[in-house]
Image (spheres, rainbow, N blue to C red):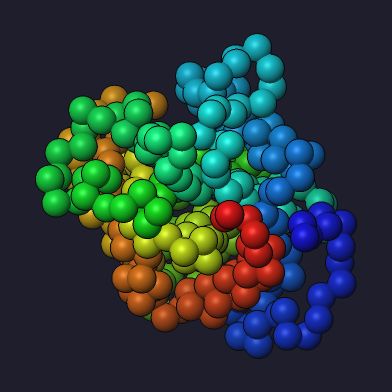
Length: 264
């Protein structure tokens, strides 16, 4: 059942006892978008960030204020909701290819960036479709990030506190939490092999958090200079910075009941 965006009732066990994550948990919640209304909230945020702000040519119908495509039909969409304002601070999707009608569904990066997939050992074709997924359409609302130069607004200095066993400030933590949520969703969906298109600079930043994506393709022009990256979900969980693990455990626990039946 989908979590009500207006629900404010939180049991004691829902809030981590670690003081470093308590404030974030009190301010934000993740919602698996399963209803038509909540999914269109994600599409609207994507339209605002990708089309209006960054002028990316994404989605199927540029004449409507919702950015969506055919891959959303077999994706898990997730919203990061700011509790007090009931505003959607961010969103992401996990594309789950399935076998159907005698053919295999492709990942978006196979469809749009196949020429950039150059690693023969870590190519989507090397894995069973039911073990694959792609994380994409991560976006943070401009009101919840400090820079507008990209959809996620994250700089190296934002993550320096992690080296001193401290959490980053609120804005960078919003961005990081989306990747933590994606990691949790992939695991809860029973997938393991994760692909994503991202800027090499951003992959280097995620490495600081312990999410060590491996570049598996050439840098190509896809909404700017981007390359295909791969990460093993099991290794992603094991490699997380210790400072982030309490928050990750909370995010995974909050998503688990919402994920029942979502990946079927």
